Image (tube, rainbow, N blue to C red; front, side, top):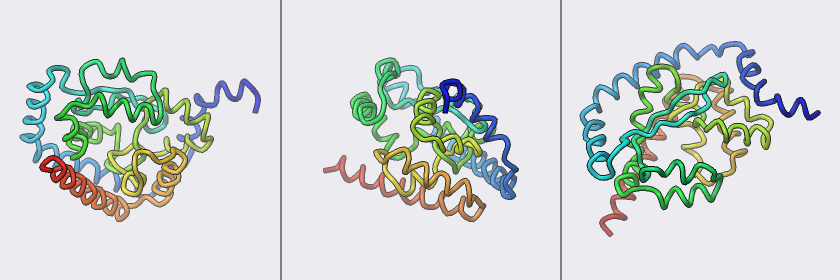
Length: 225
């Protein structure tokens, strides 16, 4: 591959992702996204309000983390989460990558943030991203644009994630830990992309709920000990 091809490769990925024919289950999956995200946002709005107040009281503003992520067809969107890191952590972590980023992120996590991450309650605002169509409940986890550039250079097939909306959870999250190689995570993401269906979607949602519950219980036991 020539230098010009390498230079323009990332720019061509979104076009490649758009070329494929729509999947037969995409409309049904989108209907599930809208139904689940709207229902959970309404039911858990009091919980979200309390969490917002907790972040504000314990570590001030901003309450929400907003970060750019690469979405379906290469469209960049703003992903929202409850802030779990100390104020200004983004500027201190911005140039890090891989295991170093993971280690430093742990150091920057607030006390409330550790609970929010363990319970994954910090992800609740992403239901808004799902509702407006930036994300799905199930799909590959969204990555930052700068990471996407690195990963498409290292893993040529990485662009295929752009065929679907990024998700709150997915096969990789239910089967693997955070420290696993990106290429291994991609294999699970591509399995979802190829086989996605309402039945599989609901299986992944159920598996995620079980995993989150176990993590929350383990974290609770650890704090008591």
